[in-house]
Length: 526
Image 1 (cartoon, rainbow, N blue to C red):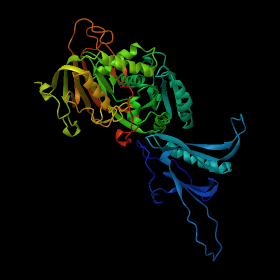
Image 2: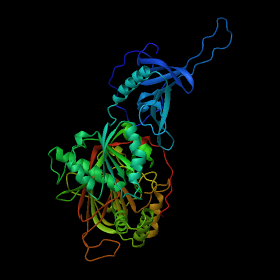
Image 3: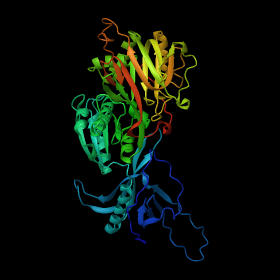
Image 4: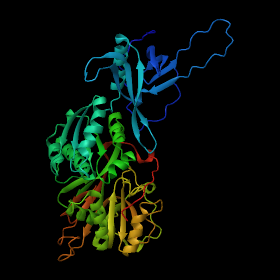
């Protein structure tokens, strides 16, 4: 070893949401070396220098005799940013079946790399050296640096929904996610849910201070249940009211989403892709993204927390799909869409909303919207009221990207701008409504129709007009029982619903939608 310097743990800046391309090497004065030694990298002996922010190496060139006129070869230096390293292990050669011991070969660094299409992948770099003392000193120093990244979890509470989509969540977790958590030295406490509401009941009794984060492996419905449970638990721990909430308490730990459903809106919105390794590495690397979330309340109680909701077509489609869970997931979804379109009927209701006061954050509202249908109320808060027949009403605090809507169901909002995207589709012909739906899968503006109106709001109230008797088997089952689609989870029984947005109430493991590449997808359901 050449001039080994003592290694001391030092605080490092908390890692931000997205790994960036390596910057040019910093001056030594700003990032002084901690260790220096010789390793074999890629079958070449290299001079390796470790600092708190970077690991650099370059091939060792043989000395040339005096008077040698040959051109001196340039030594190409390579480096790894320490913020992109998530684990370091001793590399050993073992016999078949041998689990411990073995011949020491060196050190392996496990690195998180960004690929195309918003994907992350894990990669390895081997630094070979047969000296036990040499490797153990480097291992200790490298681990001290990694432990300085405080956003990275050391202990996680994990929920796995075995009934999501094609019942593949347990396989996804144990075959793809758990090995990466183990590699990163993350301790896990796993609950495989047995029924709807199981995760919520566990969270209510869970001592969350024992964990650095909570992770859910499942579809949008189970993920929404865990997010709701996290925020409800925060209320309980703070000694606050849980029946009716005006000022919610912020979630105490970050929440990680591992997609294992059919639509995976939340995963697409955070990661830009449905990819297990990408979602897992965002958790391991501690990429934290503050996200807005809503409370859905009746006049007397909290119904639930959620990121997005649909009333009308989107909710009726989900309600019908839930009645046919015996079908395969994709077949069930297509059947529900087609059947609901065949019996398409508008909802008659009264819709009120409180516009966002900051005009810079507002939507560019459709020039052809029917403004004569808007009435300003007499209240001091300047609530606006719309009455009529609506095919669908969407209320979204996040953009809601998915494979069927690559630009998002609400492309003009963001993860944490403190606003609600209110999208109102008035009664129109079935053909025109289908044209509107198909636009979500294209680059065309899905709101550029005279029957579609968009607003930016702080709060929204919806009160359906009561009807008498039954409609059809596939629509509202009885008077006053109106379904809601909240994050892909069905909520029934609520008549008047009040929606409020709460800025940055929860931290999710992921990135901002502004950092994601534009992706292309097509919709095969229409």
